[in-house]
Amino acid sequence: MFISILITIGIVAGIGGFLALLLIIAESTLANYGECTIMINEKKELKVKGGSSLLNILNNNKIFLSSACGGRGSCGFCKCKVIEGGGPLLPTETPFLEEDEKKNNVRLACQVKVKQDIKIKIPADIFAVQEFTGKVIKIQDLTYDIKEITIELTKPKEIEFQAGQFVQFVAPRYEKSRQPVTRAYSISSSPDNKDYIKLIIKKVPDGLCTTYIHEYLKEGDTVIFTGPFGDFIIKDTQNDMVFIAGGSGKAPIISMLEYLNTHGSKRRLVYFFGARTKKDLYLTELFEKLEKELKDFTYVPTLSQPEENSDWKGKTGYIMAYLKEYIKDGAETEAYLCGSPGMIDAVQKKLVAIKISEDNIFYDSFN
Ligand SMILES: Cc1cc2nc3c(=O)[nH]c(=O)nc-3n(C[C@H](O)[C@H](O)[C@H](O)COP(=O)(O)OP(=O)(O)OC[C@H]3O[C@@H](n4cnc5c(N)ncnc54)[C@H](O)[C@@H]3O)c2cc1C
Ligand code: FES
Image (cartoon, rainbow, N blue to C red; front, top):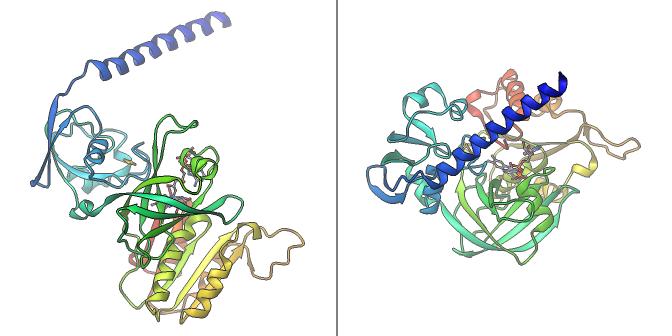
C-alpha cells in the first residue's frame, strides 16, 4: 500500500516536472514577442527584442533601476510606473506595493515581462546612474567575516554620490554561481574621494555574491558596479543625529561621519554600534579619531555577549537600553538606522517610544 502511494506520488511529480520543463522550453523557443517599443517618460523611445524582464532590458540599455536582489523579486527596489502594456499585476509584486502604488500603476520592473509595446515612467535621476569599471586595489580583513574592498575607478574615473548611498556590485559567473549576480553594497568612503570607493562586506554563509567577494576576488581584479542609488542620506538640518547600525551596517555611517567631519559639522552626533563580542568590533581607531576631530561626537560600541574573562570595559547588553541616556530630552533628533529588517523594526519602535518623531527616522534595510 505504502509503496503504491509512493509510486503514485512519483508519477504525478514526474508528469508535473515534465510539463513545467515543456513550458520553459516552449517559452524560450516558441514565444517570439518580436520587436517592442518602450516609451520612457513620454520622451525616450527604445526599440527592443521582447521576451525579457523590463528590468533586464532597461539594464541592457544602460538605464539602471535600483535592484538590490538582482531581479529575484525579493527586495522591492525596482519600482517604476507602467502606464500601458505591462499586463496584470502579479502575486509576486503585491507584497511590495502600497495600495496607492497599486492604483497608480507602480510595478516591479523585474517581474514585468516585455511582450508588447509598453509605456513607463521612471524618476529623472535614474538617468544619472552609471555603470562603472574599477580595479580592486586593496582587500583588507576587518574581522573574521567582514572585509573592506577598495576599488579605484577606471571608467569613468570619478563618481559623484552622497554619503549613505549604495552601489550595485556585479559578481561574475563563477564555479558556485551559474550566472552573474548583482547585490547592493553601501559606499563606506567619503563622497569627497571621487576616484575610489570603499565597500564593507560581511560574508553570508553560502551567499552567492559574498562568497565570490570573500573567497575569489583578488587585488588587481577588474570589477563592475552601477550607481549611485538610494535616499538614505544626511538631511540638511542642524538637528542632533543618532546612528544605529551593527555588522556591515557601519558602511554608510562611516561615509556620513567622514563627510560631516571634513565639512566642519557642529551637529551633536552619537553612534551606537551593537556587536556580539570583541571579535566583532572593527575600525575602532577610526572612531576614536573621529571623536577627537568632530565637535560633538560620541561612539558607543556595545557588546551583547562579551567573552567570559574579557577585559571589555565598555557597555554590555543591547543598545536599546542606552538610547535614552544619550538622546537629549526635547532636542530635535534625527535617527539613521542600517541593518537587518528585524533590527530596524525593533529599534524604530523603541525610538518612537522615546519620542523621536517617525518623520525623523531614516533607514536602509539590508534585506
Ligand atoms: C540598500 C542595501 C545596502 C546594502 N549594503 C550592504 C553592505 O554595505 N554590506 C553588506 O555586507 N551587505 C549589504 N547589503 C546586503 C547585500 O546586498 C546582500 O544581500 C548580502 O551581501 C547577501 O548577498 P549574497 O549574494 O552573498 O547572498 P544570497 O545568495 O543573496 O543569499 C544566500 C542566503 O542567505 C540569506 N541571507 C542573505 N543576506 C543575509 C544576511 N545578511 N544574513 C543572513 N542571511 C542572509 C538569504 O536569505 C539566502 O537564503 C545591502 C543591502 C541593501 C538592500
Ligand atoms: S530587483 Fe529586487 S524586487 Fe525587483
